[in-house]
Structures are given as C-alpha cells and as structure tokens.
Length: 180
Image (cartoon, rainbow, N blue to C red; front, top):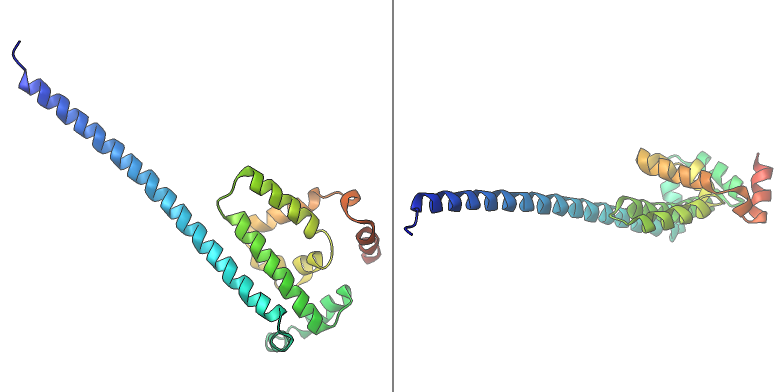
C-alpha cells in the first residue's frame, strides 16, 4: 500500500499546530504563576522592610520620641498612652511593636496560602486584636488599620467580630466593660 504523503503532511501539520497551542497555554500558565509569585515576594519584602523600621523605633526610645515630635503626633500618643496606662513615649513604642505584628499578619494574609493557613491567621488575629494593647493600636493608633487595604481591614474586623466575649480572658473583659 503506497503512502499518501499529502495526508501524512496534513496530519503532521495538525499535530504540530496542536503542540504549539498546548505549549503556548502551558507558557501562559507558567507566566501567570511567576507573576503571582513575584507579587507575593514583593509584598513579603515590603512587609519585612516596614516591620524592621517600626521595630527599630520600638527598640529606640529617642527615635520614637523624635518620630512623635516630627510627625506632630504628641496629642494622639498622649491619648493612646492614657488608654494603655503608659506615657506618650511608651505609647509610641507599644504602637510600633503592634504595627510590626500588623505588618507580619498583612504579609501572611496577602501571600499565597492554604485555607488552613487562613483559618490559623484568623484565629491568631481574633485573639490578639481583641485585647489591649493590640486592639487600641489597631483601632485608635495614628496608623493601625488606616494604612492597610480594605480587604485586609475587613478580614481583621471580621476575625475580631467572630471572637465571642466568652473567649476573651476575664481581666480583659472587665477592662473592656470599663472602657464603654
């Protein structure tokens, strides 16, 4: 039986075309995931950088004082300090420590994660942000939730609201009741 070279050529061309389409689809998927990974790495680096800066202020009373004065935040930190029963300078340091945690949590929330990671983060935030000083700094600090995107703020607020008052330690429940 003689070969029909035209048919063989058409089959080869069709197979080549299908292989090109499959290769392009594979490449598109790889590029998409590479972009997601690069964005994730960028967010993580940003969170680490901000965290390092706020930790430097939390660890350096003189730098914290200079920041408070240069940003004209004395009144804000005096009020926050009064709520937390510390000086304004102490409030700057506590607020910076809380901001460090907020940036860690933002980086975790915004990164590639599993549903288990998200549930664990929700639990951590629901406990940690429900009590002082984290609650004070999140809600009333000069930065707190004001610097984060709406999606993360909504996640934190929803996590906090899921936390029942019965799960909060008694000392903090009494403190919360006296604040109202």
